[in-house]
Length: 206
Image (cartoon, rainbow, N blue to C red):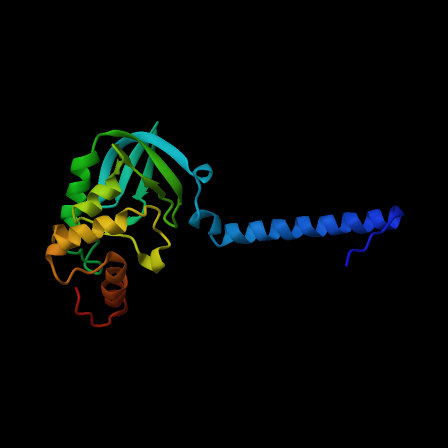
């Protein structure tokens, strides 16, 4: 049923209704931002670019880019590489150093324009690093068996739909880390090994 009001009272009701709708829309927008919904479905308009020279490679999915005079920490999007050692309580995984070397051989010293999505909780930019010909550093690492397609959290960090297929091929050919039948995904390693050691619990995987 549609109620039509005329005169000053009707205009006042319509203005209140419009204000209420704007408030709801604003609240919904804030909620989406607060819970990361805008990042999950990142569109080209939401991405940004960084251009600079690779000055260091920390591990198989993390590097430092010199942008002008600023050093920016970069986390490669959509992958998770084997962990390198971070002290006695955080031992590295098999292929951790091999993955770091593989990434460094591809990109160290080069200048690139990265397509970035967001900053993570460590203030690193989460980016794709294009290598030309439709390739990215993430795709090359996964295809070589030097990183996992990041399916943590049911794939909520996955922005490149090509990667799971590349991983399946690398696993079938037993490339890189897939040569080991007991390969453990880094997101599992961090809680089954590192978190267990920090809490003093027994852990058989590391």
